[in-house]
Structures are given as C-alpha cells and as structure tokens.
Length: 475
Image (cartoon, rainbow, N blue to C red):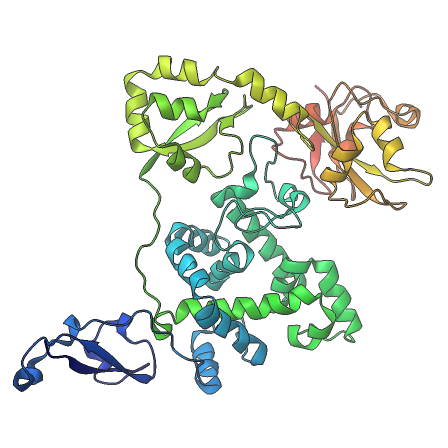
C-alpha cells in the first residue's frame, strides 16, 4: 500500500490552524513529518480530517528559545516571582527533556492531591502556585522518606511536624496524612512568609530553615532578595528555588512539551469509619472482601497495617464496598479485626528502635560533663533510641543542646533538683505559660503533675503551647 506523507504543523500560540486542533496537539514550534497509511486517495487530500491523523507522542521538542521561556514565565507569574536565568532554564530542560519519565509520573498523580492542595491554600490565603512545591519535595508521594528522615508529601522532620500538630508514633505518622500534612504545610509557609515578607525567601527557608536564610542575609550585607543572597545559602537551596520555578513552568506548559494528560491515577470511591479501638486492617479487608492495597492507599499515615487503641476516634477511609459489607455482619467482623495480632503488634511497637509508643516526651538540656550514655542511664532509655529521636549520626553532643527524650510515664525518676524546685499545685489551679515554657517545664514546677495529666486537663492533642496561654494544672 502506498505511503502518504502528512505534514502536520504545530504552533505554540494563536495561529488560525492552532484553533482547529485539540490543545494536546500544540506541542512545538516546528514542522513534523509523520508517515502513515493513506486515509484518502491523493486527489481527495483536500478533504482529510486532521483529527484522525496519528500523532507521534514520543516526539520530544528541543530546548526552547530563552526569550520564549522568559515570556512564558512572565505570563504565568502571579504572587510568587518567576525569574528567568540559565539555572532555571537548565531545570526546565531537565523536567521537559532529560527526565520526562519523572514528569509523566507527576502528571499521573497530580489529580490525587492538587484539589486538596488548592482547597487549603485558598483557605489559608496562600498563593495557588504553592501546590507545585510538593512535587519538588516528594514527587507527590505521601510515603516519601528522605535521607534526612523528612517524611510525607511536604517532607516534615519529626520535630517540625510535631510543632505544627502532626501526631507521630509507631502506628500512625500524620506527616504521611495528605490532609493533615497539607494543613501543617500551609501554617508553616504562612509563618515563613510573615517572617521574611518575600516568597522566594520563604521557599528557601522551607528548604533549609529560617536560621540559614537569616544567616545568608547577614553574610550578603543584609540584602533581602533570594538572588542577591544566592551565593550564601546552602548548596541544596540554591537549586531548590530554581527547581520550583522550573516545575511551575513545566506544569503550566505541558502541551507545548508534548506531554499527554492520560492515565491519571484516582482513589477508589470511599467512605469513612470512625475507629477508636485496635483494628487489624488485613483482617478487616479479608472479612469484607476488600482490596488491602486500596485501604493502604486511602490511609498512607497508617504504618503497620493496624490502628492502636485511641483516646479519640480515628477517621479510617475504606472503599465503599467495605463499609457496605461491614454493615451486613458488623459485630462479628469488628470483633475479629479488633483482636487479631494485637498483643504481637503492641510488643513490636514498644520495643522497636526509636519507638515513642506509650511514652511521654521530655526535653533535656545538655550540661557540662554529660555524655549520651549517662543521659540514657538517667532516663532509663537506650543510646540508640536517643540518637534516633534526635537525628544524631554520632555520639557527639554539646553543652546547651536540647535533646528529645521519650520515657515511660512510670520509668522516669525526677532528679533531686527538680524535686526541690517542685511546688504544690496553687490554689488558683491555673498556670500562665511563660516564654520558653514547654509542657515538661510546667510539669516539673508542681508536685504530682505529669505531661499526660496536663494534656488531659487542657484537652491538648499535642505539646504546642503559647506564651500567655492559661493552663489548668489541678482540679
């Protein structure tokens, strides 16, 4: 059969021919020759239906003109500056040419999380384009864990996550909860922007910490734009902001770089169960004939396929079919799922390295003469746990350093100094939080007061308190 050479012109903007083709066809400012079977006889070629012509989706457009990219960035710029330079051009080339597989993966995942990001960014009054930040942080993977042990879609370290109200223990790590971690990220980004008044600096601080950005500002002679302090920020941060600009560009110009919007991932249609008692998820899945993979996908913050006994109900997402089946034989299914493997998992939870399950957190300030071994003995914990809780790669500690220590409520014996300083609970039965106070500090001020009791008296879900806040310390 004869071959027909079909010339298909691709325009990036505005031409009359462009308006006649689907947006997905507008992939490059070039001429592409596609060889295919003839659709009509040559004499009828004027009547060819261009929508039926095969398009070469494997075609990769070349590196675009810098003038074109700079203009495109200006057109999509909103609240966050999108400067153009060679560094940014290099990352655009990476996302659109060198590692197209990564960008395709992002396209497949974007509809899972972008609606959630957009909802909370709007609720917190933040720029919509910040939704692209999670791509740089985690590749839109809620279970991502970095070498530095940052976790989740927004890559929170444990201390920062807890500061913003995320619960972390052996069973549940809310840094992997898409909704709760997104709220926490919004709070943190809002705080950073309030600190620096500049979105590029806020992004840099999100990556390296506000202390490093402030240090860079000082070293740059108190200049206050990212590109002016660029040589003084950590090496990773020098790439971080350009990557954000590049991925923002890429996600807004997918068709120009010949990316398809097909085969996007979706969550199974789900409903919720409020769970307060221990729940073994594989047993639940088996008895309701559900897909365990779907349950885990809907609940990425659950770490060991089970929920522990909880003080307040946990919202468990399950496929609709799971809940429907559960209603037909609810008590028998829940009875089995609430007992299978419970003792074995609780034993693992209590003895796993670095576990905080069933323990209270205290903050210890290193004193002269302290070593990790002596601190561990004093608090009846393991050195390996101390290192894990504080992300220590060696046994080196310094005077004044604060260490997070998780102890069993009955295992920690107060030092003679703290006993001497402890006072009876005052008649007013309330305490006003002072600057620098932690729940541990307050618990040590009064005899018989523990962190857990403070939380229960004040309905606190985490250890976050603020100066001026009044806490009930007795009843």
